[in-house]
Length: 592
Image (tube, rainbow, N blue to C red; front, side, top):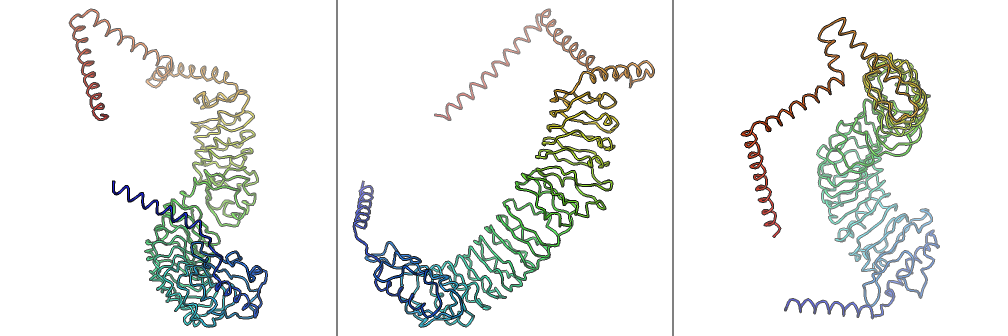
């Protein structure tokens, strides 16, 4: 009871405080801060600045309503300035700007300060800015700071900023950054284009989540990077890095990594340790090959490997993704031997410029799964020589359209070809008669038309043939192995005649059986007669009838056997009932 009353009193006091706060008339900005902002604007008169940026900074108004100014809504009785954005107010850097630290020192509750892109070369009264101890976001990018100015004017100040979470010093002339190790509260650090070489001073910034060090002169990354366990984005592009430490296991939360435009020759084992990575940029390096287990990165959504020196095979695990859009024409400039884009959502046409890839004209083996994309099978692709290395090609379940190119008939070493479940049109190419080693040919579920080429009966190795659910017409060939194909192989073609194949294949089958029995009289001929479907099913029916009626006869004429049989049946049923009732009781106990 006492606890409940205490909670009610606390809630009542909280409501009263909120009501009183809502009834209080909070005034505008602090007068001293308003005058300081106007003085900062006037100090810009000595340099070339864009007046339109600060045109509403005029006397007499509430500075909290000015552009580029933020105020703390919870401060009382006046709203204190909490954010100042003076970035890009300069028209150029023909004159250096030396802001007066005493003017900025007025904003004791300032949390955000952006002075980027202004050509600042130092401070007047720099010790006064040291009073700004609540700054959390500090942007000083693209000014004229160097190591000396930073060491004398900036470092003594930011070392007192215990809440500093975001720092941007990009575009300045910095080479020495060991002082950064003391900024333990940093979450985001930008040192883009600062000419730094040594980044060994990052031991203390273990809480970094965003690190941008692109466009510098960094040659190596030390083991300090293992300590940044909470890093989500790291940009090290446009440096001279050759490799990352093999123990790159600490950054397990990393989602974005850019190493583009470096001097990397290989992708080390470190890449497998960043299993959470979603985007990895490795373009414009000297990478020669990919690790075979690249697909362990199951969360990876974007991988850029353009402009490298890669050769050899691409791991087959890269297929079956969700890539979209057309096949880029830039692929024609690659020195590819194998390209597998199967089971994706690619659209458009296959670029005709694929003929420019000299390795496919055909001095070395290629993989015909090159065409495993959702597009049009381009007839312009030529096969100038026999591809003796091809064996099994599955291009099914895509969105191919257009006719089957007759050049596919030149794949004379092919054993299996699956083009089912596409949108292919036109006739079955006569050139398929050249597939002398083909064993399985599946063209089902397309929009093929015309007749089945009679020359296909010459494919004596063909054991599986499916053309169901097309628009084929005419007569099914009835010679040789075509008599062994099931009717389901041809169904779904309303204009395709099946009567002739049934009649002729049956007569050929019977003739063959009779010839084997009468002339050979051996076991092989006899087995063919026995293998006849009618004889087989008749034998099964007769066996069942004899067994069933035999049991009935025993029960009918043997009284003792009949009694024992029914007693055993009763015992079995009672046992089953006992088990079921036991289970029901257990369930009732569990529910209750």
